[in-house]
Image 1 (tube, one colour):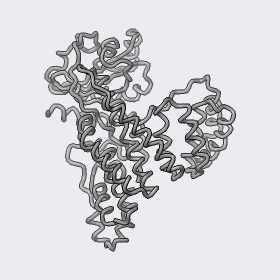
Image 2 (cartoon, rainbow, N blue to C red):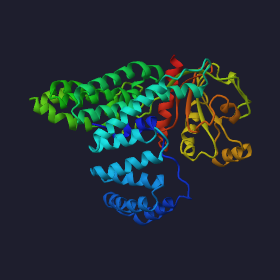
Image 3 (cartoon, helix red, strand yellow):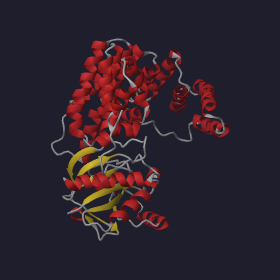
Length: 440
């Protein structure tokens, strides 16, 4: 019942991303060679080969984080249930990662594999205690955009560990503890989630709200409360947002339970029916999640920036229009795959009086930026403002999107575009969010 696409995003919030490797790491070179030599193998054979070669890498280079990451990847790909191997990998990743970065991920691995579950429970309990202490940090009197996003991410980091802890407690048959943890999941959804995130069910339900029903159903099944379990699972089955993202998996899990309860085929047809998405809601790329948006009300500081396709970019540039702002740089490789969609969205909205697209470049080299725009034949507006962005969002990650309202306030923010290379899915969603903000 734990969907890997969902948990990848939850873990993105709960732990630090895997650190980038440099060519100086000998394991990186060894991995590149191995990948070239084994690229024609099928998935199963390639996974088995990685399991074997990664054992040699961690033995030869025990201080390499990348070596242990590949060892972990091999265990995931081969669906290993070897408790000792998982223990070895987990202890070394926790050792080599920054504090509080590796433990939630390793605990999730152990619980998903059904090994070292009691150890996973201890890791998660300690991690949540630390998260609780971090959540008590006072907020600045005049928060910057960075402060607002950090507060949201601090809060969200508890969600993944809470879900994993519930699963661990169910496996350990600690049902009273599991009920308590599920109650805390519900409390977070009803308080911090509503405070920090846009409530649009397109992005909120599959990755957040649905977790409460999944965990409640798992606990009910474990306690032989099958009627309750069906009721909880029905919240997923009959929800078009969940079905759009996760398809028939929940049906395959639930149908045997329905049959066990004496349900008929005709009853199942009624029970398992789901309506279509509401009119106007984008379908995206089925199976690929719509990531949630931070909900904000951050007034952009005074702005007066040089720009292309605009006289200058000032706060007046936002008046009367809802605006997509795409933050990027020519040196940001992942941004390149999103820029064609940004251009397409600009082409769709350039004659609108209520919607617009303005990109914000954090390049230092303006001549390089001009050359890049000409080479790619991009015509969308570009404001140039690294120092400006650094004043309220230092060390800003390019690739993020803001939706700015007609008063010049950032109302929605997301750190990345998950529809890279799928132009229509990206533009449809942004138009949908623009119209939502405009309606408010």
